[in-house]
Amino acid sequence: MTDIRVFEVQAEAQDAAAELLVEAARAGAPIALSGGDAPGPAYEQAARLEPDWSAARLWWGDERCVPPDDERSNYLLTKKNLLDRLERQPADVHRIRGELGGEHAADEYDRLLEGVALGLALQGIGPDGHTASLFPNSPALAERERRAVAVPHEDVERVTMTLPVLSGARRVVFLVLGEAKAEAVARAFAGEPDPATPASLLRSAEGETIVLLDRAAAAKLDNVG
Image (cartoon, rainbow, N blue to C red; front, side, top):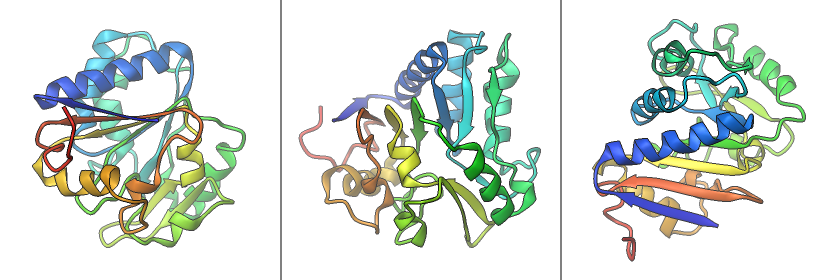
């Protein structure tokens, strides 16, 4: 099931994401977090709604191969906006150690993820249709054995969870904002599954997929309220 929810302003979509994150944190479900511009305010709101994350177990859907204090780090984004604002820290924080380099970090994360079933995976979508660090027509899209892989990229190498791990989440939540994402959103949720738009391939296999959009991001979807 794919549940598309459209909000008039970005903050409302971010608040909705925060509420879903808090629900998963209170339940103790493993959560995969993401980077990018959209989730920062959602993380801040989640910390305000629930300052006690001691039951939560945190993972990251992807990471750049940089140290954890690098401004490009998805972990650092989460630390600043969520972790540093909490009264009680999560029970487990499993960051991707990108500073090890792609292959070593991916091997380590692949081992750590053995047997892990995500309760929630928070995802974004890039203007090119990528999600996590699964890029258009990437060989990583076809990976079915490994749980994490290294992915080359023009700016810096990445490590990403693979589709089987992300789609195994009980809830896959996409938070996508802004006019620049409208075309990719239409391809991901109104078109056929296509490796040229990796987000179109990611849905919760046995749970629910929730899509949180502002009006601008939803502009090219038909029949959406």
